[in-house]
Amino acid sequence: MSTPAATISHPPYLLRTPRLILRCMQPEDAARRKEAVDSSGEHLDTFFRTSPEGRLSLDGHAAHIRKSRGGFDLDQDRVYGAFEPETGRLLGENFLLKRAGLGALEVGYWLRRDALGKGIATEMASAMVKTAFEFDKVLRMDLVCNPANERSAAVARRLGFTFEGRLRDRQIAAHHIRGDILCFTLLSTEYPQTAASQLQLEAFDFLGRQVTP
Ligand SMILES: CC(C)(COP(=O)(O)OP(=O)(O)OC[C@H]1O[C@@H](n2cnc3c(N)ncnc32)[C@H](O)[C@@H]1OP(=O)(O)O)[C@@H](O)C(=O)NCCC(=O)NCCS
Image (cartoon, rainbow, N blue to C red; front, side, top):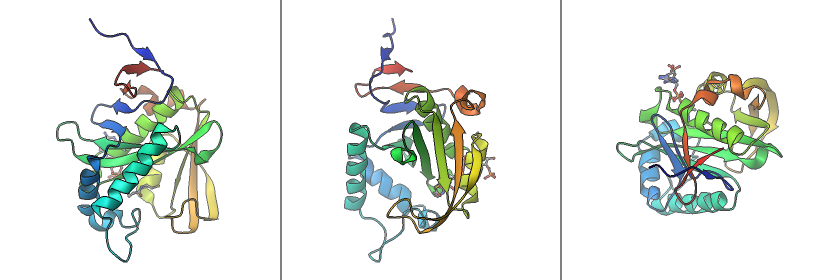
């Protein structure tokens, strides 16, 4: 007999989609994150801007995970690692960020180089969109990217986001390069018509219990 689904009072910590496990990061993921970033070479150099000392060390990745995991537990920004179920490899990360304002979340993502071009980012972002509208009950989602980042803009369009405009001279985080950004949005009234609303998704809470919206 299956356990009845619990009602949720906090965000899902683990999500299962057809090809991925998306979950809150753990200390042992630091080595996986370093391998994913290091093996991606120049592909992620703009996203993870390298310092004069070179690429991020294991301790640097651990510090990042510690900070993002803390934010997750405090109902602030949420970072979900995207793992390949068969191997446990980290394929990338996706984010639900609060800087979009009240009643809204911003979705973000990156993929390791050898996972590009298979629709993995679209699947990850669809899971974020579904979680934000169905569990967090947001009214709007934002997605922003650099004007040169055509692959990211393509993900936004594939997800059914509307291009709102090019915002001039922005720096929305300390590690970003200052410049124009493209802004896309999806409203809760539009969400039911998107492919994300049809995504097969299972969600589990902090205690590992399956949860429904
Ligand atoms: C942005 C980024 C995540 C997009 O990755 P991506 O591989 O282009 O996106 P997807 O994984 O959704 O794959 C889409 C491609 O897979 C193809 N595809 C194959 N199977 C698919 C499926 N089941 N569903 C959707 N697309 C599929 C699509 O046709 C598309 O092909 P194309 O690139 O030839 O047009 C990636 O470029 C990246 O990590 N960039 C660096 C970090 C970054 O810029 N992050 C965003 C900051 S705003």
